[in-house]
Length: 90
Length: 514
Ligand SMILES: [Fe+2]
Ligand SMILES: [Fe+2]
Ligand SMILES: [Zn+2]
Image (cartoon, protein in one colour):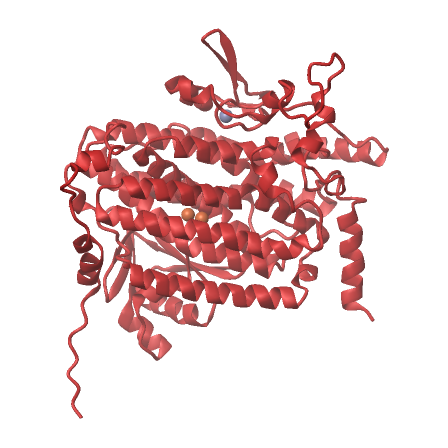
């Protein structure tokens, strides 16, 4: 059975770029916009790559900055300097 | 000029150096005397170093990001208040959801802060100890910011100023109180399952995500910023709860049976606590984005199933109550609002009959149950109210000995029958809202016979102001209970005709006209 890993952010200027990066790096990503927030679901595994976010933002980005915009997550988390990964059943 | 920079440490090394490497084993006293509570629940841990916080958040980074969150939050709060934001919410009824939130949530955040301070002290590993310490600080922050954000409303509307006094006394706040009292008096590992898993993973995902998005939709920027700011910490809290469950299961196969019992118990307790949160979404937000049923499907059925499917590799099975919660999602919010509507003199917030378009929305969102069971009741109560006979139940509620909800839910499989269970323990009869609560009681009766139930206290004469003779033959607990609760009469009763209703309309008029 596949489960969705997901992440939700407050909508703002920074997360607009983060969401764009997630959509490009995760084929099958489903983006749902709700008042003041945005939620992205990906089957099994969702990855956020630092370099992709930096490219969209046009500046350096520390993945720990995600802490400022996060609303919720689903999946086991693994975080390194380069990738923030949420996954089920791996 | 050439500057030589030393290579920055990676996240993993930084985390290891700043947490685990700063810890030590005690030598003046043996470790098991320093950490006496980690063994008595029966959980076996062989290697605390196997625990790693997946966020790899170090204390210095923690302070940096939390400070940034606070700056953003207070900038928005100030702007909202300076701009008379309270008049931009959809309609005056909305403010009642904040009154319910204020009584029920910040006090529980404070209990979470206390709980994580205690549990953090008990954890042998530096990883969980630091994570618990951060969570304790976070929860204290939630407690404070929630009160700050609502304090501006308190300048204008009734019923908010005595929330701290009411928290441990009022009937409808007892479910949340008992949830945390139960968790905080358990051992450290059970506390982690109760709060880290059931409260964070099941409850806050609904309270702080769709409900807060709904607050934003209703124009309440203050609740939105506070709710989302809190929930940005909850992502870390859920991760801690999940790590703790995985850690226990990986450390020893004997832990499975204990952990499974806690998952069964606390999923049910979380579900019962959610009935009133669901009611806030379905009935108290004038503009709605999603029904409780839809939220439950996304955040519990799908998200919970993802978790339990994943944990199946350790032998964990889905919680026993799962099927019952799926059945109840179509009923509990309606039963809860009816329950509150029927007690207009017993809450510091107003209730009302949903308007015609709201009844239609409920019919659409609850096609299997609303028109069949609940719409006829609302239409009847509405007709009675219009005839000058608004329903007013002045009796003490009957509460479940475990979850302390008012006994008001239906028998599984039979929506027309009230669910009711009882157990005799040491010659005394105890009452329950459900088979699941009864089972929790029978597992630990010595614990639950001590539950504080405000209606029992009132009937025993313990809730009367000083000087009242509770042994007098004509003593009536109901006539003193409002004083005992410090209930502001202006805050009670139906929204229609209330002072809040008049003031909101008048002030909004001033705000939009010359
Ligand atoms: Fe919290
Ligand atoms: Fe929390
Ligand atoms: Zn119960």
